[in-house]
Length: 158
Image (tube, rainbow, N blue to C red; front, side, top):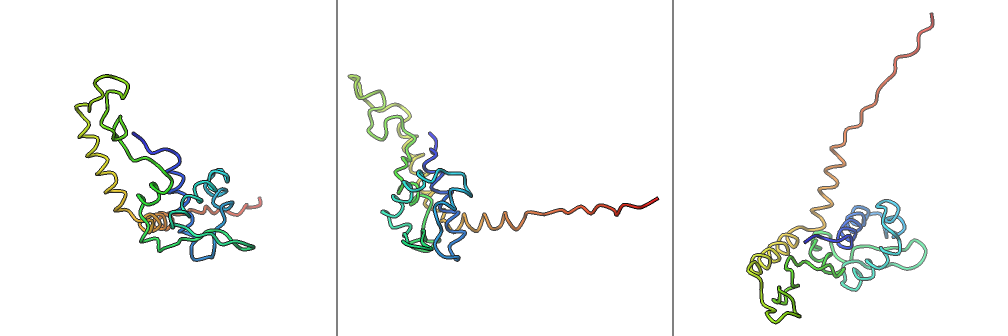
């Protein structure tokens, strides 16, 4: 089980958007350049995020996207679910036919309950992390960057 690029890119793009929220609408082309995500892919993702009322689009010159609600009210689970990212560790997709729907047995595997519980824990965790938490974390990282400038001694003439 792994999170696909769809979920990763959606969360990354939302952090980028939230970081720039105070400066007016954010363009997808700007996010695309900063995060190295295809513009057409971002357009697809943001269409889904808009339909789930996570972002709003502003048309016209100076337009772009902004958050539809405060970053503290948007969870990582909201974002991932909005872009149709499956959060499922079971082999059967929750259908309880782990040994295959085409086999006569078509029954749950012995570890089905383990993976179902993991699904629940993942959703609980992702639902506990807000977009604001990720923005704050990113800002903290930016503040902890230390820039070292070396001064070169002036050349002396002999």
